[in-house]
Image (cartoon, rainbow, N blue to C red):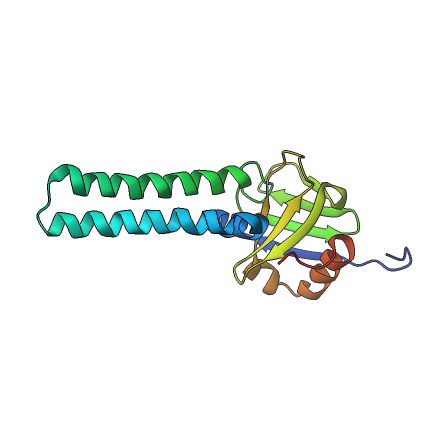
Length: 172
């Protein structure tokens, strides 16, 4: 980016509830069939457990179906949350200032944390979230930003321009 031009954006955010599953879906497109499969097993197990309980089946049959459904949902939830654990955006509400150095995140009375562009390899989005993807094998978490926080900011266009400039086009 030319040094004679200063582009920056600022927005406030609140960590989105349930966004970890969306983030996992965006960040790991090669595993979408596994994500869908776990959701299917979860829903199927729950429905089958309820149907067998209503039909008067043996306790172990319907309880087993419910247990399998709950276990699949727990595994999926843990997997998604573990991918976002430690993100600077997960700790609570705050503000982010975005410029050519990266994202400077402030939460409550805590010291600001700089998330430099060099620590990121790309980004993706859904209608609910924007996901910043860490460099491969860095062990760093997915960074999930609520899309409404950016959209409600007057700096939304500048934020997207900075994303495109430093990280390229969004990942499918």
